Image 1 (cartoon, helix red, strand yellow):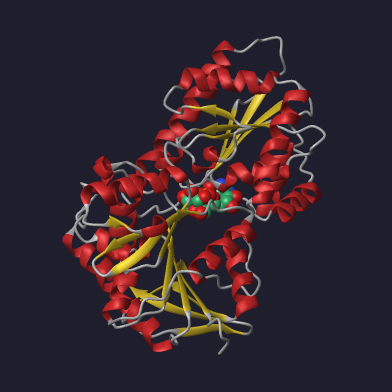
Image 2 (cartoon, protein in one colour):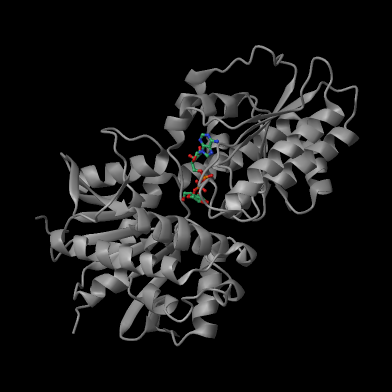
Amino acid sequence: MSQQGRLIVVSNRIPTEAAPSGGLVVALHEALESRGGIWIGSSGQVVDEPGGLKTLADDKYTRLAFDLTKAEHEGFYLGYANSVLWPLFHHRADLIDVDQGDRDQYMGVNARVAQLIAEVIEPNDVLWIHDYHFLPLAAELRKLGLDNRMGYFLHIPFPNPSDIAALPDRKQLPHWIAAYDLIGLQTQRDVSACLEWLRGDTAAEFTLRGRMKLDTRHFEVRSFPIGIDVDAFRDAAERADITITDLPTNQKLILGVDRLDYSKGLPNRFEAFGKYLSMRDKNLPHATMIQVAPPSREDVEAYKDIRVQLESMAGSVNGEHAELDWTPIRYLRRPLPRDVVAGLYRRADVCLVTPLADGMNLVAKEYVAAQDGADPGVLILSHFAGAAEQLDGALMVNPYDTVSMAEAIDQALKMDLHERRARWLSMMQVIRETDIDWWTNSFLRSLQNQPQMRVA
Ligand code: ADQ
């Protein structure tokens, strides 16, 4: 065992491929390869009886997976995580579906995963736990007497105090948080929301150097905006060189790439594009919008409506504006391979990233990385994406105001090369400075520097 201790990463899903793809997964994979350690997560398999940890791979580091039972999958994953925490943390208390049985499964899975971790952890190991599926995990581990350093990164927005008021676990939440040594959030806005709530609605107190204290525990809340592997994305985009045979090169392409999720603001985006089509200068070449949005979490009730709603909106915009040889919205429900997405980004003149709430939104950063610097496209970005705090070269929009979003589309399509380049260069500088390696290293360095508190 090294002096520094091994890294133990816990995330909801664990990659099953030998060489995983996707920015975050690759970054964690690399951090684990260089330090050695363990990655623990669910296998994605649903089984009859809960079992122990299964070794998926054991090379430079070990991947250990647990299966979920059907009741756990429904209560922990579909239920409490995705029907309570996800909507609430995206400011959609109207969509929450609270069920005591689901909550019991959520707590049960966290307690069970804590037991599984306790079987493999060693005294100097450092834990890095990811996302809303595992909010109470450190508290469960502390109950087992573990005093290892534990860091947590929340990939989604931190809720406002009024959202938290609707959370069944609002009384426990401060203690779940205080069980970690370091809480990483995406943005300064999230950190402010978290500190405002801790100060106003809980018994937590500020101590020296911006740290907080609750119960007997000291902890720190800081922002670590997640980044991407800029060069890998740029190279993939250069290589992909997409030609869409029925989209002439003089025709403008507007692109949207999202998981189909109510937080991503897709209906507002379609409405804004429809308004743009009504106001556009008919002498200019057509602009076609490609929206790639494969369904996700289809077993969750709130996700069923959005798919039907979007299909009907695309049909109605197309019905009103299509011509014999031109369909304004192409809506693809199939997921596309990453290199095809990269090529599409590069071909697109405009990318619409217009969520109503989003932790960061990596599509915004990937689009910037994929551009040809000699003739870059324009990013239209919602104020409500975490990425808005960093990417001030984007055209910022309020996704609720579809008229001004339509005007932003028009402005983007008409923007001259000089302005496009200036905006792109400033965004490129930021995404390079805070890329995925910066994110992993700065979080882990900060976690390592937290004083280790011995359990009394
Ligand atoms: P997500 O909500 O999944 O992630 P996002 O960051 O936009 O959102 O996307 C993650 C990845 O999925 C990106 O690499 C993107 O290219 C890919 N992707 C999305 N839609 C796709 C599509 N239609 N086809 C192919 N690939 C697609 C959560 C939070 C975000 C936060 C990330 C990382 O909700 O706010 O940025 O975690 O912390």
